[in-house]
Length: 633
View (tube, one colour):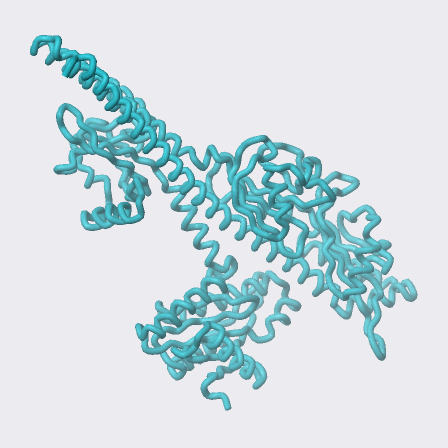
């Protein structure tokens, strides 16, 4: 073949080879970037749902506090007496009540208002009179329910407050009439913001933002991580096209999960969730650059390696072409110099990479070389690493490694999930990106290691937070129902012969809350949860369904054996007083309803409904007893 034609052929081959590598790299990067974005969005969805749940529960607790206080008949009677004749004893009683109520829950203020919203008596940092208070008081009286006073700027000190108003009724011979309104004020900085300030894992840009719509504007309601003094001062137009807050506001109650450009002009991943019962939208967001940082570093490293490989290939092809015009000795020397230059460029890149890099002999697992980053990460000198095998670092057994490699292949992943042991003995979760590389005519395995321990830990914590009741540590309602669904499927497949479900309810729990306070109520719930865990089998699954109601899933036993378990637990709870913070002991009782889970049950509602009916029968029959649905007439 003529020399010029041969050169053109080689150049074309090299060009096609380069384009193929570039195209493959770009496609792979796009796929990995999309996957990483989805992973981070899933994490942020879990964070947003968790925080919305916490805020909703906190608001419900505050409403319950106010409703309980406003419904106290003693306070209603004292207010009626004081308004009627200015009774000083009644006034002192009311002021004492307001002071104690405010102190008990750390409210900024507790105030009694007239029906037109005018302040009558107050304790604490009383709120300047709001023009809207008349309307708030009227709505509370008209509906007979607690009314939320939304976030607003305090006119005197510039702090951000919110509150609740509740009507106070006094009984008459024939009916009841409203005589006033109870208002409590809360500082957002002390009560609300702590719930949304903390991001669950270390992050340079992760942020939770609370916003609401005010006409055609978006009001930012909390202090922001990247800007100071923003609460109620930073505003954007609802029509702003790519602003996460604007997108979430326009979506209304519908959840959103996508990318946008935030108030700093930075592209971010974000999730928006409405907070039920409020005008608020909670946004969880993170800079896209942080979400893709590991991938970008990997792409830079991989791109450098590919560039070096292409340079080596070009040098090799060029050498082949020039070899026709050189003596054999000259050609050999030129090729050797080209390969050495290529290897030297690789060596510089390998040593300077910020990520741990290892060269491994695939034949026996020996570590042939390691860079400085690997030495720092693993805690061994480079010379020590060169005497070790990868099995001294990788904690997985050979069969588990093979299984993980097969999973990566079936899931079309370009990395392996391993657990590596450091010199200190600490075990770290890592993603290992590996590929073949020829060095000195030897085929080696080139591995880049990325530590994902913090990410894995956050995923586990989020999973635990999403499935666990924060107060008792038991599985929450959603997780319990999921496990019940799984049990129903096992019965349908005849995997287990039988199963039962138990519904438990604390007797007179509202009276405990009203008499001893919510802190005592929380202690009681934790106490019962511990006794439940201590008195069931390891395979049994307890859960907190809501309020003072619990449930236990009992795989493998029918209603007769379930009754034995229930009676043992009921007697244990009745015989084990709970110690309150003030030193007082409190005896408890529970009522229990049991139902067998039948293979013919098409939905999990069926056994729960039967168990709930049995529980109702136990309550109706005098409480502190167990009733089995299958034994009811």
